[in-house]
Image 1 (cartoon, helix red, strand yellow):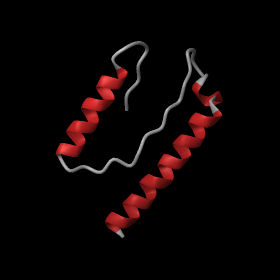
Image 2: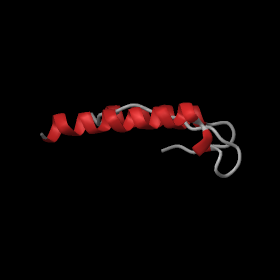
Image 3: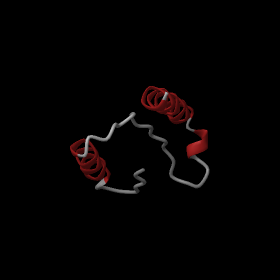
Image 4: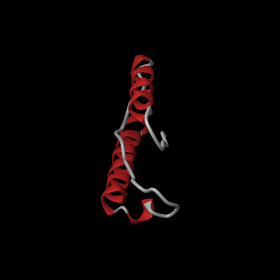
Length: 67
């Protein structure tokens, strides 16, 4: 998980992806919620749909790996 306020977020995400892939760890995807103030992320309908989709991909991957 990466939470950010200003610059540096893309570098952080990129570094994490490189590390995880170099360790042969599966990456199920990403989800982004946008908000400036407390509680705004819950109002981001597109972000919530992305989180739901990510959860479904994670569940699919876990079923494939562990049966």
